[in-house]
Length: 452
Image 1 (tube, rainbow, N blue to C red):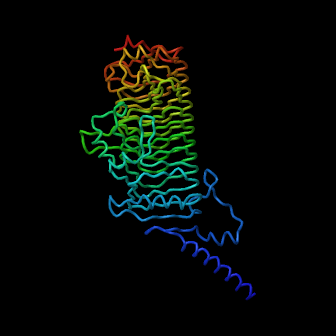
Image 2 (cartoon, rainbow, N blue to C red):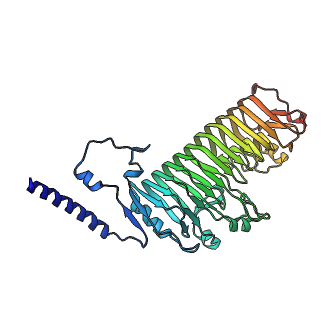
Image 3 (tube, rainbow, N blue to C red):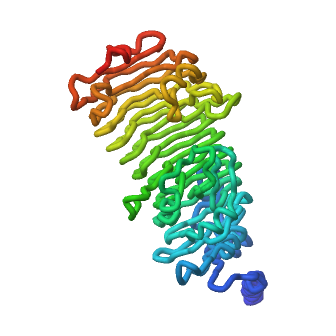
């Protein structure tokens, strides 16, 4: 018996020693640490029968992951980009990076994070990007679509980013520099970074975070499958009344299948939610938007000869306050337009208050005058779109019109249904406009020429 006990203790000692040697040989950045799951070495040698919990993707849950921490920044110029990159590489394939509460982590270098596989990032502190405009405009990741750039790119498979912390784009300096400019001006060269971008990613979850003061779009998902945001707060608020945030959309996407946004608040000066070309299988529920351009499908059809589409979207229980638009579909017109379709879209239980255009089908995008739009109409078909239980108030900016469904003569608009629309206008009895829409839309409507 004594011999057996001695053998067991010797085995445990050798395991502990081996683990220590492995860690001792690591090149660990100053202030970083690696914490193994509790008793993981002994569990692997002496397995017991227990039900192991897995996450939604069949991987280890938080408590069973190796945890990596890094040092925090001492000040706003103390760049920990290299430390953060090291931590993600070390946590890849089953680990977790933890950024601690009440700590700041300054990122001052572009980061290619497209190598990720089965990794958790627990952000309880603040990730803050430097506002070195000269550096970022020379060092970034560029996307031709609307000349977009970003600080970093997240990609790979099974990526979970969560916590109670902040990702801060430090946008004020960018807004000041962009004041008076326009993102869609072909001569614009003042590119501003997107705060969070995924590319070539599958299974991404972002939960609980505050996405703050993005220089440009807040999120942009590219070539991504199954991405979900839950319990997110997005805001972009300027301290300079002469340079307000511009183009700080909450959610944008390009070539994405499976996009979900739930239980989220957005306070920005542009689109609250706006999937771009080739986005399919969209789910939005419990979304609150203030001061935005609405929950839009599009824009699409921007680039000449290119086919775009958006299909299968369910938008439910959304509040839209104090905005330019509410529920909107938008497609490009003009001599250099593309073509495509928007199909199978449902807006249900939507509260819209103090908004210029509560419900709108805009096929003269972007800032195309009536003459040009008539000469070069949109070629984007709009089909099978339902608006159910839409209520609230307009600002009266468009007179008595509370819903404007004007279809392009160059497109087909069919299967458009309105049900239980209760939107008031301070200008009088509300009006719903329908032009060039095929079939009955379910409510009384008039041509725009008769509206007032």
